[in-house]
Every structure is written in structure tokens, then in C-alpha cells.
Length: 359
Image (cartoon, rainbow, N blue to C red; front, side, top):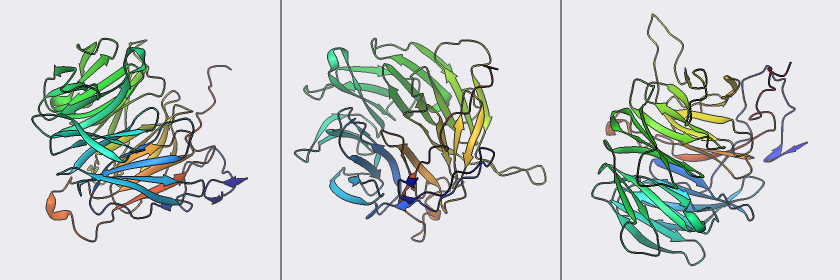
């Protein structure tokens, strides 16, 4: 069977958990500084558009075809590094969060961008969601310890909610909004009642929260931390075994010491509900949370992976390789790679394991 980017290798047996990178294709004309975020258009029809935000103050939009070839379509700017980017549900608009304290929206058709909102400190995260009646809305989270909701047809925030500390990460799926702040607070919000926390918990992981990512079915979320651990958390506690955490981005112990690496991003497969973790150690893995099993692990890609995302059909897994600032500015050398790779997802890579419970 022909793979997405050329001919795929023959399917390995399910016991082989080491994946291959040989068919991965580099994005043409990538950013010139560290890549902060990636977002594919979720629009069900139309081409695969990929938005890339970066520390060179820009958001770039590329079109990617079935052979993995990419073409730049548009670019717009903030006045400081762009920390997060998100495509609207219909694929017509892109929202971005800037260190310049602004939330911007770019309309792809007109290629016009406007500032729709401002915080008192840098904006760390931004996500689209649909309010009652299908109205597209934005929610942004900032180091000013607030999340704000924006109706892009109006001036000023529609609503502002105070958090315990600076917002480090945020994700939305359907009516579920999850906000991770400094001091390991995790706030769960039902977007039908956006002004209050449905639930607040402290991360089950002992160290700083790096990323939260909602399940594909919005029943819960995953948390990644700086110490190479990931936690699976359901919104409604079904039973005590539903929530669990596991070690991922760590070196094997040597002399009772194990190097731990930040889990920089977690992405859920839109079809299978399995997920990826990617880290400062330059590796990514695919996992099945229901079977509590690693599906595939991949060789080191030659630099920290700062962001990941699947396209709408789950056939492309994009990952950004760039400096993640974990060792301070002095390690950000001109030789450090800055690129986005497109990994064609073979059918067996992200499929859940067959359930053993039915036997």
C-alpha cells in the first residue's frame, strides 16, 4: 500500500514498538527562531493548512499536500514572540497569543489581522470554542493570572476570570476548558458556564505543569510536567484506577541517577483517541491510555521537540524541533536546528490495542 509520503515500509509486527523517521519530510521555509506552537486547520473539507508560531514574532501559514510538500500561504506579525496559535473550527481564521500582551486574529481569506484583545502581561495560550448558538469565541490565558473570553465582533472582553497564578497552558475540546497555572493548579471549566471553575485540583505530578491536552472525546485531559511524567485525568472520577500517571521522557538510570526531561507537548489523535508525548530529550512516543501501553517510540530527532499536532484526519503528525529555552539563553546557539517535520502516520502506529476485557 502506498504511504502518505511515498511508499510506506511494510507493516511491522505489533510487538515492534520502535518507529521509523525515514519518511518524515521537512517543512519548507521554517521560522528563523524557536517554534512555540503548531496548529492544523480542523475544517472537515479543504486542504491541510498548518499555522506555526515562533519567537521571531511571526505566525506562518502553510498548505501541505498528500506528498508532504509544503507551500507558504501567508504570514503576519506580533511585536514580540508569539507563544501560541489556534485555528478556528471552520478553518477560516487563526488566533495567536503574544508576549506583546495581545491576542490577534487573522482572517485567511482577506489576509487581514486585527488585535481583538489585550492582557496586562504576556498571553501564553489562546483557543477557539463555540458558544451557544454556534458563535465563534476565543479564550485567552495570560501571565497576568486571568483568562479572558472574547467575542471578536465586540470591543473588550466578554468575561474575565481570575486564576490562582500565571496561566502556563490551556486546552479546549467541545465544552471542556482546562487551564494549567503556576503552582500546579489545574482548573476545569464547563464552557456552558464559563465564568466559574467546575473543578479545581492540584496536578498529581510533583513538578511544574508544562502542558495540558484534552482527550479527543472531551471526557478528560492529560498533563505533562517538567520532570518527564504524564498524568491521565478524567473530569468525572469513574473509579480510582481511571486516573494514573506514568514516566515517559527520561533516560535509563545510571548510578542511581536518571536524567528527566520536560514533556513539552501532548497531542491526541482525532480518530483513534490515542496520544503523543514529545519532550526536551528530542523524542516522541505514541500511547494508548485505555490499555495503559506505549504503542510506538521514535529515535532522537536531533533537538528538543517544542510542539506537536495531528492533522484533522490523523494521517500527518507534525513536530517542531527547536531550542526550548530549558538551559537558558546561552545554549540557544546558531547551530541549533529550527524546523518542522511532517511524519506520515501509518495505520498501525496510532491504533489502540485490542481490548483484552472482551475475552
